Image (cartoon, rainbow, N blue to C red; front, side, top):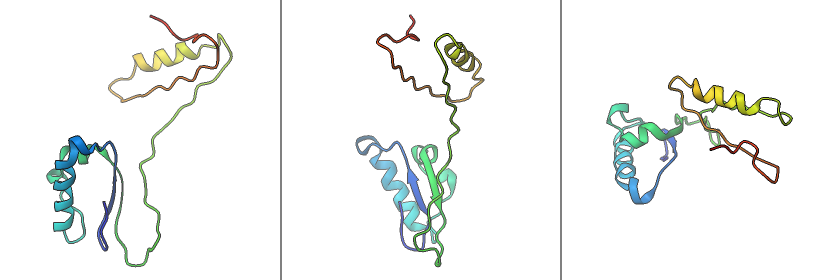
Length: 116
């Protein structure tokens, strides 16, 4: 969401079939505020939870890049039997409330990490 002289936002996870009300509500708040910076608690919940990046408007920064939130990433590699699955299971079992995602990329004919 962007407008001349106002903050610019990148918002993820938007589905037009489910979030049109949130998009319209945030657009109205964005337009109503002089700088396009509506109060956090007044923003729709989905917008608050899924704002990926935001950039303040500056008169002199034509073409400036937007800052986007960085997501930590760890890549686990190793030979067969090196303990990759054990390590990943340990991390997942001890997440302590952290939100984690795992992407598995198997190259063999049979997925060696597939378990019941």
